Image 1 (cartoon, rainbow, N blue to C red):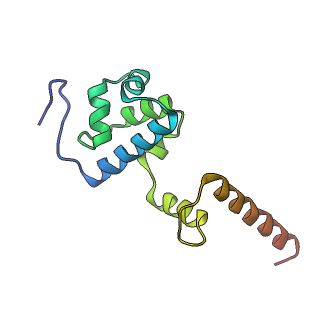
Image 2 (image 1 turned 90 degrees about the vertical axis):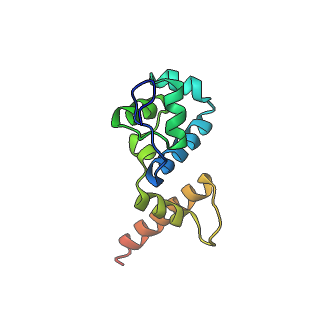
Length: 122
């Protein structure tokens, strides 16, 4: 089905929904509303809203424009599931959520330990 702007609108797919969830998360982290982000990205607000709801498939130009407006990498919006799972796993030791500062500290501790063990010949 096409909307008035000629865009294909369909039922949300799991992939579109995951991208939409990431868009919401990054937009809220930036402290910006949909209208301002759409304007900054050069797309219409209704189109952006449909992207967040997963009703429209994000094109590469959409992703690039939105990522640029949010100052994030396009692959952060697309999401690499294996990468996300590795980051989440490294951030937790007890199965619970972990804030970014704690995750960074754990990663730094790991790198320091790895360097030490390498120097010791292990």
